[in-house]
Image 1 (tube, one colour):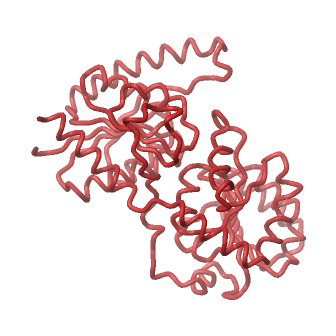
Image 2 (cartoon, one colour):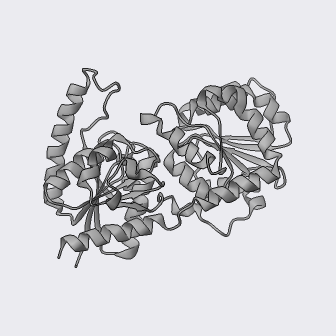
Length: 372
């Protein structure tokens, strides 16, 4: 087969976009002449993130369903879906892909339905332990379904499932980093136990409020903190902190670009339980306290977190209890080296290395079978 042509569709959040870019990069690594077109949803973050990663993207006027599904606003969303599917067919006919890949999110539903109707083989990648609505609806149309957790046959045809893990940002895997140097780079002590607080690409209100309400307690503890608030919450948090006594052991950032150093510096991570975050924590063998977001479809973050908790690979604090419990558990865990070691080792056991390359090989295989 000569030139490989692949459409990759999905997005809406970093949890869908990072795996999509990782798969594209792996395809380019295996087959440098591969032509890739991304199809996303207009006005969603993929329309900026994908071009920044060096790939072409076109947008669909598609929106997510309103819950509960019987709400009248979904009628307009259905018409947008029909329009988007029609537009996706136009893009597919023009681009002439050998295979279509869906990573979840609004756009992948219209795109992969269109590809299937045009006879293009489809592969879907499900990041979560509880399958999303989009991927469940595509299950019968995909020739291969790449998943990150065991037991996914309750959502998908067993014969088409392949356990691959989730592709993660490859720049996190920097083996040359030294813990003490990374801490110094954040203006922190090289010796003190270090807590990293992250809330996903947009930040997390509950986690931020929990830290803010226990700020004085943290400032007096024999630990140090790297706190990524997310851009949306940053100015409010800085304003609230300015009213308190200065704390030299807490570094506050709106966004951390050098996440490889932040992870390396940390003894313990507080995080939402998005699929990409969990995959990164496992790959890096990081002990974590997961605070699942309650504002996601099918409560899938709780399912993600429990997959680790059940293997003694993470601790979990429910969102509703975070303000009361999160900081106390974090401070206690940071002083328990045995528990930190156990959580980190068990998290490592759940990691899948080279997920993006594994999925890329399946994409190439599907394209070759289609060209016979």
